[in-house]
Length: 252
Image (cartoon, rainbow, N blue to C red; front, side, top):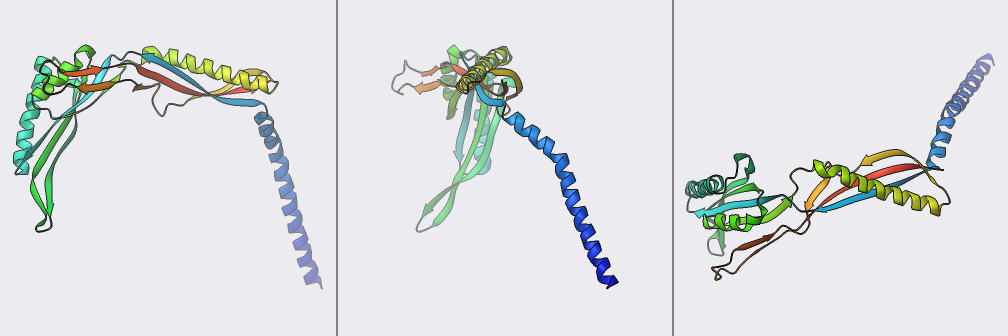
């Protein structure tokens, strides 16, 4: 009888401690929860967007050479000679600095053919070498591309226009984004019959780019080969400078 009495007492004591511990834990946690709910009821979060349209001052050109030959060594050697000629053209004739010429892709791969009789076979090799060339005289971009083509470039990609020094425009585009956020927050507060208080947090959201610069109206077109007086025409258009701000305000 004493044994059962002691066991029952131990169970009741453990249960009391467990209930008391939960109650004590709840007592410590509830003020924090109540505070969080109170804050959430009195804020508004918006996304402010800022954008500027500006004429670009630099273009990044993708210019390369592809060469086919019977062997990998022959393809690579021939392609290397054409790339060397192109590089000399850029540096000597067009006065492009070493820092503005960068190799972006190089490969030597077999060229496969297939027939029902022989199956898949290697028919020569293709060597490819592509460079990115930065150029600042935008009025002469078409002439540069024509000169590169005449020197052996047969793999010319799209022109990418940009702003080289972004720092001069960062403050302007951020101010536009903040003004946009203010207007949105004010409209929401008015609809809710409240007023906007002070800013609680501001987070710039540009995926690592502050701000983002991208070509918006760039275009490239080639004249017909038969038109000897023609050439490549490149219109830089404008680039857009954008940023986004996630802004949280107090509501009064």
